[in-house]
Length: 449
Image (cartoon, rainbow, N blue to C red; front, side, top):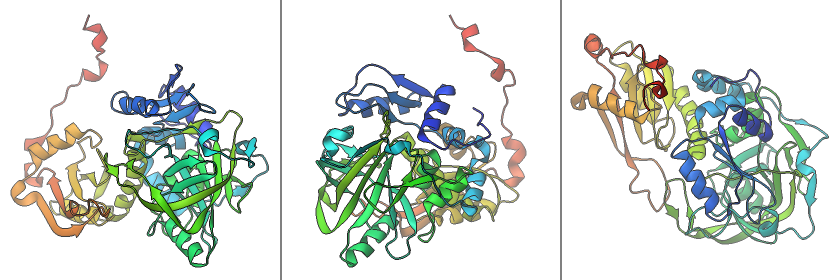
């Protein structure tokens, strides 16, 4: 799949590009927002792994889209970047951000609801798992400003829809949004936020990034789409929002108020227990007339692709000084990665392993392979481990180092390890891989009845 030269700058662009590349499946039969939408999504990302557009969702104001940026090449398609170049291009775009610009036209404000807002009526009630506390916004990007500096932040934050103007939003330090809220609360003030659903693709990627507190994801998104984000003032809160988004839920996080949120089926494929979280008072819902709602399965292909891509960028920054890096992947989950290198000596894999493990606190397992291994195919990675690693000298264990910090599972995530699954330099001739030169020309339909 080749990427177009120009990046898309809206959620509609993303839908159109996936559709044109036959990477989007349309569901025309009526489906239930409670459990059925996500069950179909789960089935899709475990099989064909294409985007989904549910055109008729029961008791919903409009269509629901899921699993859109579920593959790294789909991100490349959205941003106009060829697949092999995506990591270095995104890293360079992060270094050369573009500040948003204010525009007049705001498709996201074609419909404005301020009187009698009801999140249980005005938004699709997507329930993901049987034990969830209720419907959640899972593809909502919270936009807020630092009360002290005015810097904008954009981040994914799950939000439980209670009813009326009442929602519960997960945030806490050290997440930047949690720091903003803590600062506002210390001053006895609410934190104004705008929750964007159906955002420009570059903002979706940037909201998953690990940029510093004093930088803005809005600026980084502009760098990644190679054009400034087009923004307009929100209707009821002092926050700028993307003009061409699908939905915006405006409101304020109340100070000194917590309510029990959850349980919720989280990205580790387990439930997080009910716990006190912040209360969001919704002051407005704005949307396009024909708005498409975006839902994301926590821990699904789209979630892991977006989180993984930004972790790969962080790893690339750390490891590129130690070897010729050909690619980085996060197959399966985001608590580890695979790095392929064009090895020049037998010391390089260890240096790359240690740098990658230090790239992010969650990084728990790192595998280094040669550049002839397809690191986006777990079968290939396991093949390299089975046939090329030397357990006597190629395993590196760092005991007692913490990784994923969530309190209920922290004890499991203690220690880190790396595997050197590269061929020793003096044995390269013995590990030359077989080739099958006619395979690319063969269509099995010509051979099988």
